[in-house]
Image (cartoon, rainbow, N blue to C red; front, top):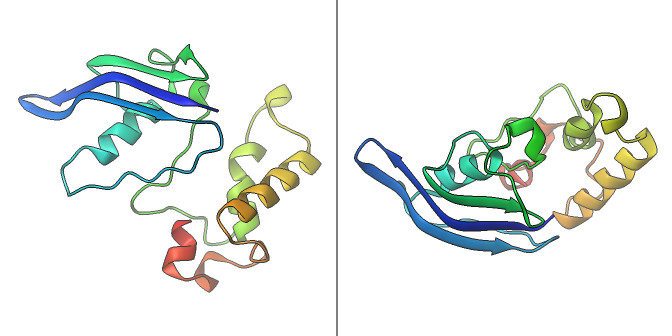
Amino acid sequence: MGIDIRNVGKRFDQFVALDDINLSIHDGELVALLGPSGSGKTTLLRVIAGLEQADAGRVLFDGVDASGLDIQSRRAGFVFQHYALFKHMTVGDNIGFGLRVRKGAERPPETKIRERVCELLDLVQLSGLERRYPAQLSGGQRQR
């Protein structure tokens, strides 16, 4: 899914967190937001995910304006600065969790979920670790 951020702005009272932000993320592209504390990285992620509403601009998914959509309808995920993993679940189960909790026709078959989990493990170079638990991973591996 491609994501386009167009002229996004966000203020918290007098503090300008995001000022006319433009960014294009192509389908399949892996992106990291880097910058000093307070530069708006988390705020931008929250706007993309729908946890915050932008005061200006638009967020588009595959060219469709998602600015007014709620978080469930956006179908976008990101890793928080402080990751949250289910300690009682394996790496593979943690990765597949979002797909498994979808309701009805939105939930892919288990074979497709396993395929997607394998694709994502390959993408983040964690293939072969799907049966491990979070405590058995390094900090960097857990963040991925």
